[in-house]
Image 1 (cartoon, one colour):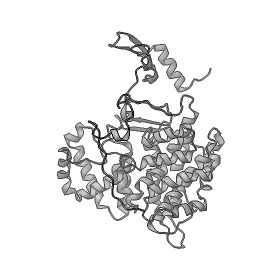
Image 2 (cartoon, one colour):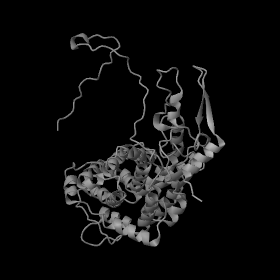
Image 3 (cartoon, one colour):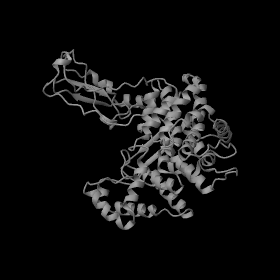
Image 4 (cartoon, one colour):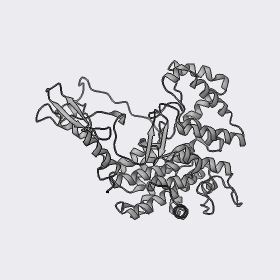
Length: 461
């Protein structure tokens, strides 16, 4: 018996049941049958719906992709209503409890958890690619002394594409594997070097005797000639945080990785684009906004007044609510426990008490319950990073390091998917119709002309 793939079973099952959508176009009175496969219709099937022969056909309009699937993926499953997140079928809670980041990265990339031998080989591969070219160090030295670490990360990732021209051989599985290993290995080094540059500290080279997480902490915090020994609780906590941030389905940065990668560019360039997408405050910078909100509240006693301002629409409640989750984000549950453990052994962050009280009151308030606003992954991650001593500028960088494995898993999957082509969305044109070119002298006083702002004044550099 030949086993069919999930997609083939899905399509066969749909065909047997003859699932279809009947659409009647009231403009013409015609009815069309559009196949439903896997709970979705193909947008290109809408092109058959026309007013006349000169009509290019109907298209769907979906700003921000609120209800549009851009691919089939076997990597991550999310059920936002029930608060479920699984990597390759494994619940995120079980991975956070039992797995390590490198084991989880292997799972995302290869589709299965590794055997002991496979994990040892994978770990050894990563360990021996943590160094970066000395010229990359010189490249980083060219950044301004106060350059944001995420900006440095975007720039250095793009620069790495010039050091590994063989990375353009993306149709070769062996080449792809080599670049995946390099990127997962080098991201902590680039991140730590960006931090050291920001602080005016000398770079610390990787120590391959340490674990993946321990090595990153070593490159971040080592001072002087003594050997750095990471705190086991801090090391394990960051390992779990990396697992939780490794992938999250078709989020903005992952979608960017796929879209840019669809041009068949090298993975370093696609990663630079994905990292740039993560840079934004609505994506990777959201946990920084949570910390600033908690600082603004200041104390648990001021939580009720702040929530009243939220309900009046004066301000937003950061770290609550999610495009996907309409219940408690499963990652936030794990992070809450980590935050309490970290604060128990470090100097207790007073903002944790503010966060716990804010969560308690919000989850008991009918206003937030009715709107299904629950803590998301950003609510506690910023507090943990702050308690561990990371400056807020490093928060999105700490997101980018683990998300590397998810980005690369999706990039690899996209390249192997025969349905995927170079991304090229449609648009609905809303500009003027054809009009004649006017000479410069005739353009004054045209009614409806939009005036541009005056010239800006800014210092020359």
